[in-house]
Length: 97
Image (cartoon, rainbow, N blue to C red; front, side):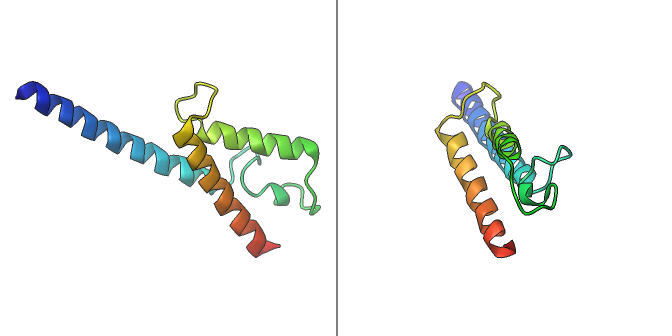
């Protein structure tokens, strides 16, 4: 019984940890980062345009924000988070422009 309880406690703690990381990732995604590669890429140089370099930097930043385990790949859950982030960014963009 002790082993079952220990496993259950471990699973619950792991789920809580993953949920907290997910919220932290979404929170980071919705605020500008110090390098200016955040969701406000259209406002970076205030010219109303996005260069190919800015576009690629922004998407690299998005990938890095969602590669929670930092293995260089996005698994299915990380992709879902990325899609949610992108949807929120697009919604804000459409409200601003």
